[in-house]
Length: 337
Image 1 (cartoon, rainbow, N blue to C red):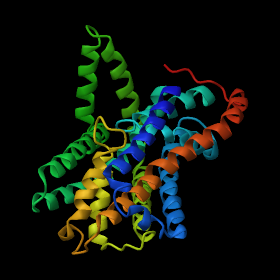
Image 2: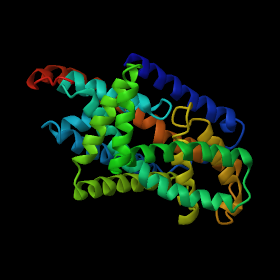
Image 3: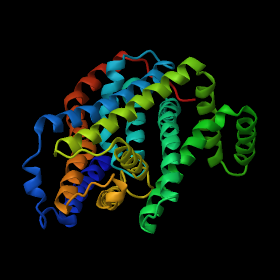
């Protein structure tokens, strides 16, 4: 757990170093930031945090199907793990949620990870649909090769996760994979763990009714919509208004690049590609933004999507850890079989 905290702090330093290196101190960006509208900036933060809470509610709903736990406690645990998202593909956040659910509520790792995958899978499914449309746009538009392949790397991750999520819906394919994993587990014991996890994950999918599946999809779509509002109000806070079409393309690009492998939350790649996007008037409906405005926009949105949520997560953990420790004896520990 301390490892994820250290990684998050280092990633935040990387954010500030990146913004500075890109020209915060060499342009008039600080002057642009002086005109920041605090009301719109606070609204952007609220929208982003609310998008996270909506996703956590869908995750908590799946946990509650396995064990009767209050939504309030599950959402708090989810928020305390948010700082772990500053890791490649946000794997640290998944690990922290599972560790804390096991420690405080006795929820088996396989159940918590399966719930995370199902909840995350619905969001990736929404993202893969809109990202596919964005990819078609970029294929038909002259774009920088670095820009295109950066987007493509994140898109592949999104697509693979979506396929993994949808795989159990095809019963024959799922059964075939389980049989293959079972055979591999005899010579290679590692695959017995993979078989065990995938079996539990498939069972979680099987227990979902159509109504529950569409409820999760709705919550995921709503969560992504509030992320979009957070980006929009980040622009509004600096008095910049983009067309809905341009803003939607930018949002899809950021959402995809955040999932690019190796980089925590796509730090560096997101900023570079967003700079390329915002620097071309043809991509933002003819609007011309100065270097100072683009740097200021990137700084504001990095505060909204990275810095504030991470600091909030650490504060929630510091405020709630002792209470969670005291209450954990109230819950019967579950055995992970």
